[in-house]
Image (tube, each protein chain N blue to C red):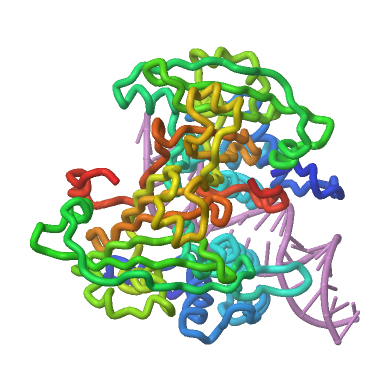
Amino acid sequence: MSCQLTVSGAMPEPLPQYQRLKAYITEAILAGELKPGQRIPSELDLVKRFEVSRMTATRALKELEQDGVISRMQGVGSFVSVKKTESALFEINNISDSVRRGGQAYFCQVISLGLGSDPAIQDMMGLPRHQPYARSGLLHHADGVPVQFEDRYANLAFAPDYLAQDFTKVTPYDHLMSLGPLQAAEQVFEAARPDAEMARLLRVKVSEPCILLRRRTWSLNLVASVALITAPSSRYRFGGTSGTPPDWAAVLPRL
Amino acid sequence: MSCQLTVSGAMPEPLPQYQRLKAYITEAILAGELKPGQRIPSELDLVKRFEVSRMTATRALKELEQDGVISRMQGVGSFVSVKKTESALFEINNISDSVRRGGQAYFCQVISLGLGSDPAIQDMMGLPRHQPYARSGLLHHADGVPVQFEDRYANLAFAPDYLAQDFTKVTPYDHLMSLGPLQAAEQVFEAARPDAEMARLLRVKVSEPCILLRRRTWSLNLVASVALITAPSSRYRFGGTSGTPPDWAAVLPRL
DNA sequence: TAGTGGTCTAGACCACCGC
DNA sequence: CGGTGGTCTAGACCACTAG
């Protein structure tokens, strides 16, 4: 302890001890040395290994728990969280994960794929008239039943290989998220009756009310994509949580 | 965190010290003794008043900060939160502001007001069976046309004077926000056809698709209210932005 | 029973802020 | 400068879970 050299740098600094411990655990997880569900060092292990007091180790683990990185159980131990980090910022889910989390089988049917140049879409993406965008029409299924039709327009400046993806295996969400961090999102919800073609695809009556979600996402200071999502309200719900509810909220019934 | 644990039954009463301190602050805010922006006792104040160690007082205040109840600044002090957490998934707008911002005249008609004790609602709010909630049914108008019916259930532990409000002048949103900072929100969007009564109120055909929004909000670690909002999609849209789009996004057409 | 996390104490030094 | 929060120590007792 007490190595307090006059490091000139700007960022590193004398990092607080509890942050050093957090970084140690986090990096071990990122490096794959600790995998989800696996046990991590106990508080006393960290006390010995890093020569800190137990309160400091406790703080590091407690904060990692609040960050959703690990789970802890009294009398048992601490473990790498199984559930994904869910960057609490947005509740923009991967449809395939969301279906599978509900215990249903996911399947995606590619209805259309190609280039487009509708001026209205180009405007929404901030593209010049001469620059086309990629377009995909995907029908998402849960247990064989169509639950959502996704009409997506992708910015080729952000995702040049969009059309080369196999969307039966990789969702647009997956592909776009692999190219850059989700920076911002704009969403509008409407209720509408499906037109004849949409009703046929979704296998619903034209009188069945559907949610129509328009979504525009930004990444790397570009409009990454615009999506028009139609879902029969009886088969798919859009929702989410913002902020941090108290922990006892988990016992409350869902909305 | 200490109050309101009604569902789980067994409640070991020797409450931890840090939770006693949290409850002390939270209840002072609920009682109106501490108002948003106002200074709260410092760590050393709490140490003396409750005869605990500083680490314990520190923990209580730190958790209240994470809960969004207070804000702390080194060298300055701790204060009751003023700003709403909002940010993430969706903007929770004041309907009257939202209508007026569109250049339309706002008017609210009180359809019903009173106490309720539907077990399903009590469960969603974490209330025991014997404890009623306040309930209001409000019809919001823009330029004289009904745009949204709001069925709202308010937690009397959070808003004891809810029923005394004049909702033609103060929206539920205004009243609730004046009592504590918005800590978290949970929302679900559905599309549905209005029933006969709802269609009559909103003056639409029963075949007109409506957005049904269920929303639950937390403040001061309590469920502040649950709202069921019905709006004809042709007259009102729900939308919002999360994250920070680039500046130039302002010139893009709306979704 | 041994190991884990949950809570707590009574000190301490520091960085920061406003006066 | 005095007060605030930010961090840290070296102990302690307890409740819980597992073998």
